[in-house]
Amino acid sequence: MGSTYDIGVVPGDGTGPEVIREGRKVITAAAEKYGFSLNLVDYDLGGDRYLATGDLLPDNVLSEFRDLNAIYLGAIGHPEVKPGVLEKGILLNMRFELDLYINLRPVKLYPGVVTPLTDKGPEDIDFVVVRENTEGLYAGAGGFLKKGTAQEVAVQESINTRFGVERCLRYAFEYARDRSRNKKLTLCGKTNVLTYAFDLWERSFKELASEFTVVETDYAHVDAICMWMVKNPEWFDIIVTDNMFGDIITDLGAMIQGGMGIAAGGNIHPGKVSMFEPIGGSAPKYTGQNLINPLAAIAAGQMMLAELGQPEAAQGIEDAIKKVLVNDVKDLGAGRMGHTTSEVGDLVVEYLLDQN
Image 1 (tube, rainbow, N blue to C red):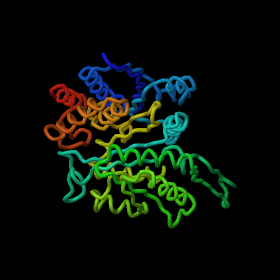
Image 2: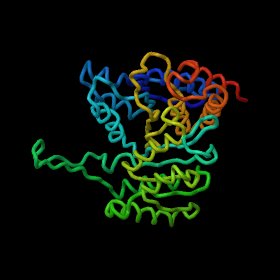
Image 3: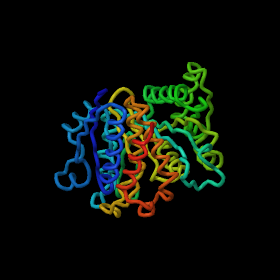
Image 4: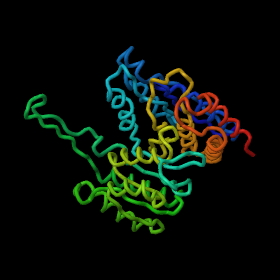
């Protein structure tokens, strides 16, 4: 038997446990097929624990996370908890405390999946967004003056450090050099208005470009990126951007690749523990009905295995997902797949194990 990986599993809220159940099924089958071991350790973080104990992300759990190889997350979001409490207290806290400084979001249209873009197919929509994940407007800098009065002032500051910007850009250049189709990297910013933050981004980008001469580079404002992602998604290979813009364009990316039901992402610290998750929310109205689409969670598991250094297993899972989409699941919506959540997971495992 080959390597053993310690994986923290956080099923979370709503339908999170259901999709993670299927993801576990698939990655466990992949481990057995490709000769490595997974030590899966469950953590009950989420809304139910918070309502019962007031705990969000306890220090002892955070300490255990640091010793893991990866974290596999289902969903965070509970209808009885005020929006923002769980997201900030668990998700953002994990990103900052574990320094998960890269958010990696493949935007890939699989065969058999319908995109809202007319006349676009899998050959046109296949790019990756590299989003800076620990700075920018999400750093939490700012505050209120005279809150609750007619003179109230709210300030939210975007924090961009040379260290943070450069390490994100370096990751993107290395990704474009080593793993991208066309070795092209596009910087997404707003240099004509956000003249301080994106001056730093643009200068750092140009300096690194002189080091990575095999990578073709270009720049586009974020509003133009949004337009071209709809009109000409085939123009893009790798896009790198800051935290806020990355948050926006990756949701647009999910829609053009067929919706949240197929979108997965990684929160990565290269060489250290990283966290992988489906992009969609907890979908509480479908909880316990075995109707939710698990493919995004399964794809997140596939990304996790790739990051852990198991590319054959990751490719095997991706190939199995493609077969399910071509042969079995024509609608990604909950309750419209023609199969239950567990049946979709079983189909992915079946195709995975049937591969030579």
